[in-house]
Length: 88
Image (cartoon, rainbow, N blue to C red; front, top):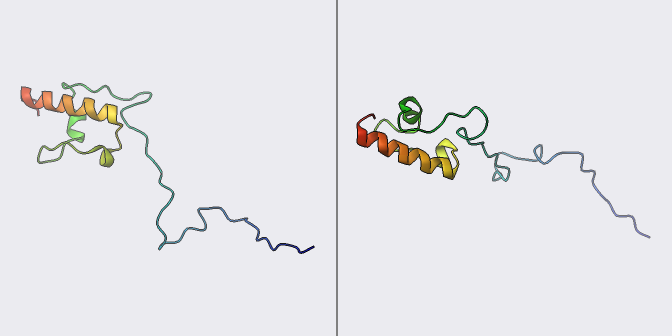
């Protein structure tokens, strides 16, 4: 019988990563507007809405703010309401 040469796999996947390899491990941030103690999305809450709007008045996309799709829709409607009422 032939013995197979097996290398010990004592290294974890993270220690094998190199600067030049593409990053296979992406860490997803949790939505800051869902969960315990999260602020309610409302068109009257101007301080919260200003965090998700640029200086030019554009709504920031969810890939930058890491907000879930459901909360992003609520954000955009409340920002548009606040614009119509002249709060922002």
